[in-house]
Length: 129
Image (cartoon, rainbow, N blue to C red; front, side, top):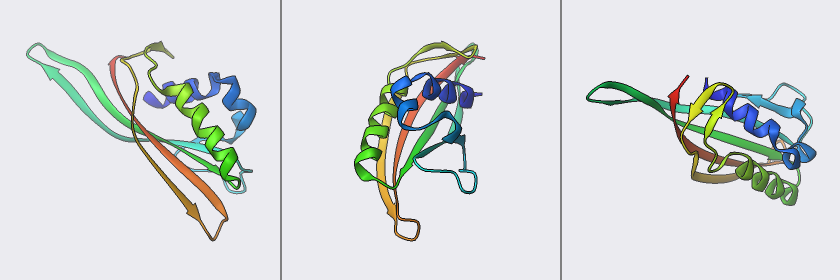
């Protein structure tokens, strides 16, 4: 459900798509032999939110991982990923979300693949599907 929102936000950012083609943005895993740069997004956790009247939403944590063989390009991609997602709210893909907030960042390098990576973690609450 929230995956549709993440994908829509990423694909709607024309500056991001200029750096990473839509064919290189995937949920969960990269297809074999995907050319870099590329992006994957994952749902990390969900917990239902209740008040005394019942269900009021689902709190999600999700991550967007960017990959590139060029560190400078990776930083440009990460900047656009954040711009595409951070602080967004409203109805997207018929799913109503509260404000998305950046909650974490980690970077790494895979020496075997000669690839830099950056993981941004976000949180939001879906209040209507």
